[in-house]
Amino acid sequence: MKKRAWVSLLAIVVLLAVYGYEYVLDAEENTELISEGQQTKSSTNEYFLPTSTTQQIIHHNGYSLSYSEQHEQAEWVAYELKKSHLSNSDHKRPYFEVDKAVKTGAASWRNYKGSGYDRGHLCPAGDRRYTKAAHDETFLTSNISPQEHQFNSGVWNRLEQKVRYWARKYDGVFVVTGGVLKGNMKTIGKEDVAIPNQFYKVLIDTNSGTTKMIAFLMPHKDSKKPLYEFVVSVDTIEQLTGIDFFSELEDGIERKLEASSSYKGWSF
Image (tube, rainbow, N blue to C red; front, top):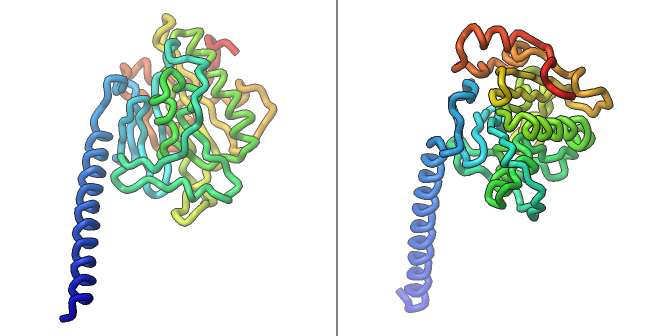
């Protein structure tokens, strides 16, 4: 074999070796990230976490989620919003990143490109401004769902602001939120990310005396209606989604609170 051929062959072998080494490193890193995501964090309040219908719960530092591979998004995102979390810090928006802690593989942000839908945060970046790391963590693709812009910036944004108001007033609330991943839904992108027809938000307050709950169910369209018109019982959300909320509560208290659609005690 000629010298030039030997050099070419050697170059190919070196490239394959480098590629193989990087592949092994990437695989090890992904395995580590998946394992880390399965571990609860110091901020994880497991007591209030809902059940997972997908059996794929991931814990990040600022929130937990249950990922639905079928719909390429979280069926729920849950987090505690304390009064001390509220901040006016204005962090620069980072790029969205694929959540490598999702074992089945989270959807790419590219599915949203040119779709006409916003990358709608479930745990809002505005709820995690207390550090840049907490803020940037909300830009993982497991924490977004396709939302019409007018809905995202309109009635949904009004509800997010109201949740911050309650977190300040009641010294913290626990939030569970997501799209209703049921029924006939359109999709976007090569990975067929589902577009929910409805979104929900469920809150529990245990800090201001008597434990109370409130749940919202919103059609995926903007509305000028007052927020209290979207209040439903937690049982309604459970029936729609198949998710069991606050199952660790004493049964009598859970049944009473989840059956009620009253918003008495919540300041609007």
